[in-house]
Length: 507
Image: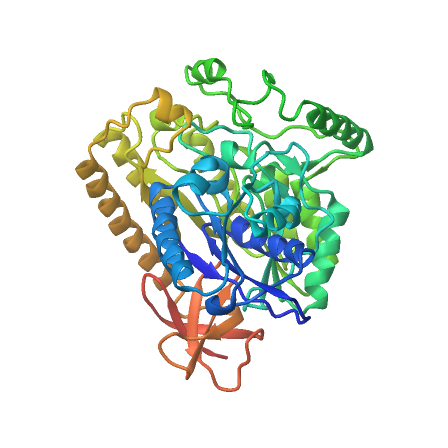
């Protein structure tokens, strides 16, 4: 889990200052930039100096328990800081943890303001309430909110790579996953709004853009008719908001999964594959082409892909546009069909491997990374060995690997026992990590002698004499700085490799 402190570099004078601290995924980083923009309407600029801050917002992650425990520890530190201050300090929790824990954060953890991921436009009124000593909380999920009219304030110190959120939410309801409960259902942002934000990145000199979504390749913007239907649904949602007995929402305002239907779905693997899109709609392949063609001088990336929705059209679009990076992050989670079925992942091991083969046919040098975890309900050693064998068959360049931690409120937490012993989880995770280190080293050694275009991101942590950047395949390469500047694109030849890094020189 990464922690990122974001820094405002946009200029302007503000009467009050906000310190933004972001945990978790790239979606949270992008959301923090939306929050920074919205908070300017409330008279708050952003600062990287905690001592100068009038308010501190922590943008949170709930995907794993250890992420939440880190937030609790951080809150204890901030509350201690507040007690030492001579002036008021507002502490706010935003994002996924806000959605999940709601009033508990205010009642038990010294938090003044709680805002869910669909409530950021309400932050000016929420901060005003908190300034007056009132309870400030809004965790209402939306069926329509995409922040389409907000140009994010680019507050990251990195002016090289920018993020654009193209969709929000998730409809998949994987049994282990909290995301549909904290971020709501899928809704896709208008293409023109996305292109407007892309132009903002271009104007500010960014060299690379990453398109973001919980399931980015399930993006589908419906045409005029579809938008009218969505508008109607939004109006209906407003009318029913807060009503008791609302059929589509739980007691806490969170869209609920039909557990009977989900239980039924676990009895069989549903068929997967591409589908025809209605005329006038824009799917992810079309959007990807639009972005690549609108910014030919920029690198284009996207994350995160759902294997179920990775169509041939998306792969072919990547292959046909040289500025779309040759890298796909494709979370597999497990190599066992039994476990995938229990997870409600709507693909099989065979489908996943078919997608890998199709990628490599179209883009032979494509880098492939993944997410995996071990220790899910009823996972046997045989199931785990199937994950290891899939890792070997694919030869992942890199992986994010975890042991299963039960998330309250999910289908698995309520219906599937967390019955793999902790020591077994740890042992399997260690074996998984060891294998991935071998695979990463093998992949990187295969690059020795090859030359890659590198987008330079900064100086090496070990020496100011060296710089680092990323290849299109998302591999880090370190090389002598010379007269190279951050943001340059240079050609580098790989001379050595470790499991984590390529080492080379400019050519």
